[in-house]
Length: 453
Ligand SMILES: [Zn+2]
Image (tube, rainbow, N blue to C red; front, side, top):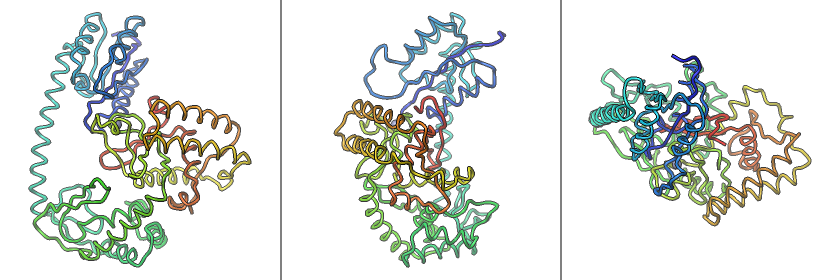
């Protein structure tokens, strides 16, 4: 074994939505492997599944070939061997050449190295493992469907308000169920979700050892959980962003709220969500949120209340879209937690006297984004304009603090009303905070990520 080895990494998307194999995850896997094994990682080449037309010479592996010819590289590392398989037979052959020239090829997740097999064999093994996983997953899906149909609740996370008995049937957990009923009743009386959350917290009505405090997101989750009406439902969104509830069980369990009550709540929520859509045209996570599938930047889509990546707009991949309000409140909660740890003082929230200049640049940026969202600007023009504006903004910001921090009494709704979202966005840019999310809608922060710039 040599002392210090130098490696390049290679990551690519397959066009299938799976956070486990997203570009950031692949990059993390490669980086961790290098740290653990004392390998110097020179560069990670990323092939995004961008368009159907391949331009010769623009592919990252061509770049990689060049680099390997001109510089001393000992290893090429990928996260999963199936990353290479899809229409990259040429790439595999290239790898084979490299291995013959003495460059080691490693696939981290399957722990496979070209010391023992050829790149082609590595890929074949990777594919076999993938196929077996798929078949196993299919069996699991079928047996879970059957269990759900029998009314068995087999998710690990039970709905708040219920316990699961030894037969996996839902039974009422009285103290929690009382809070669920209270949330529905208060919402129907006209209380907002933020206020409901705050009052529950003030009364200490959450399990401080096991749970985070109530938030408007959590209260909203309770209000849209139809399983409380006595059957297990799956929830899907239709094209207009409305929920569709699909019953998956035949067996009834004890209800916590009546079907009428549930539907009254949904009517009110739909009305208010329509109203909110009209008000909120600013997408503060545009360019900050990364697509978990292709890892390009996601932008707000005007009128639709969602974020989508450019690939999604061109319909070439199966990239996910995400509900604007949901992801924005998640980021807001994340920041407010971060700031409460940092003990941000109200002083830090002070605005400076260059406010006017700042506002001007911000409104230009906003117009630019609106135009892009309405497809009046090409991606190139948009990115160029944004770069210029960001540069102006950076110059303006040198030596002063315009960042918006979140104090205890701020809520997502209040920040929107105060129109502070633009400054909040600048803060995210300045702190180089980028986010993505997984299938379970959990927020993932990508801090100072090279690919996130
Ligand atoms: Zn995408």
